[in-house]
Length: 195
Image (cartoon, rainbow, N blue to C red):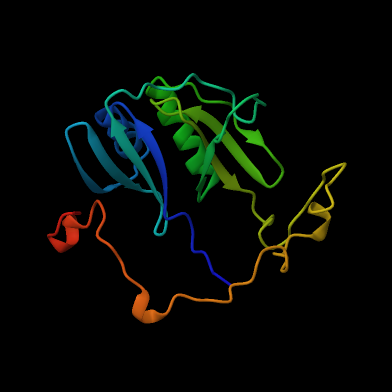
């Protein structure tokens, strides 16, 4: 089975990369670790942790989205509610709350969700963000918990991946046919531009 090691990167969009850098790098403290682009198109990456990044495309006509409360139900086409970033300590949570408030960003009270304590805010692009501290002694990764009053039959199958629900792979790509093509960013490390 594939072993995942985190979120390589979340890809978001902005119409103002400089303001985005000021927020994510300078206010939140996430290092700007890679960037590429040209007028009308930039793609920059910020370090969340040793294994996780958040990236932004800058497109000229992107406007900040209308703020929607985190978790508030919507109707119609929709693909994203919010992203939560883990912090190491409860003190980190309070430090972020104070920093964002001092910078003029609206930040929620600290909310106790039982297994995490969280604060909620929006970045300058209107992206709904959450910061969460895992409560000591409670790890839903090690001890999954469900309290859905009416769980679906699929939910009742449990927390572990279930086999037999998707087609088996009978034909793997032979090693000699595995080709990797240059993409945007390759010029940063290989000196070659995507063709």
